Length: 254
Ligand code: CIR
Image (cartoon, rainbow, N blue to C red):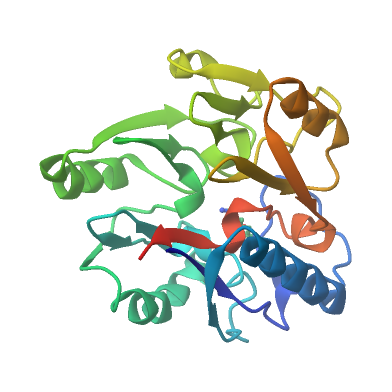
């Protein structure tokens, strides 16, 4: 069974961290309705949803992806690069403890889950706004003995590696070439986002279906032409908080 760990939207979402997008008014009620539709979409794709209550004092806590890396063998509780988010992790650790042995990333390392892209036994780790080289070193110590390869990837102009590239089919990634060197992914098909849809590279793959924001129809068309089945959710209010679709869940087999 595939689990999807999600957390309700904080009533303080409007106080979120923002790094590469301008602050606009966020309607928390609309965000909550959109989040519910996102969770329903995961359920429709056969995910078993594990729901955590909102953390009122943590505006960004709906973005659970940044707090943990869950692999088949173990989970790593991360240390988000934004200090305001580091307190989100303890309750995620408690929620994951029944499912996996837990390890932790420690200071001085910082690592957001949005910076980790898994392709099989390779973990690409973004090095940019939030995640540093010490995190790469700690991941290597934890995960190379379990058989994972850790590959650092420089990002520029975006919050996370998965703002710039996600896995959309067994043999394909969706890439924003302005923010990473896409040639790193030379073993798979590279589908580029439409030039008018800068933020479209963040999509969630669940088996043979890709869930993506409704706001990127041109990139969706590119995926369709590549033979990839998509579904859309409207996450416009979460996008104003610099979130997208991968960040709102932790997906793992149970
Ligand atoms: C932040 O800056 O941390 C949040 N406002 C957005 C985090 C989005 N996370 C993600 O895409 N993995």
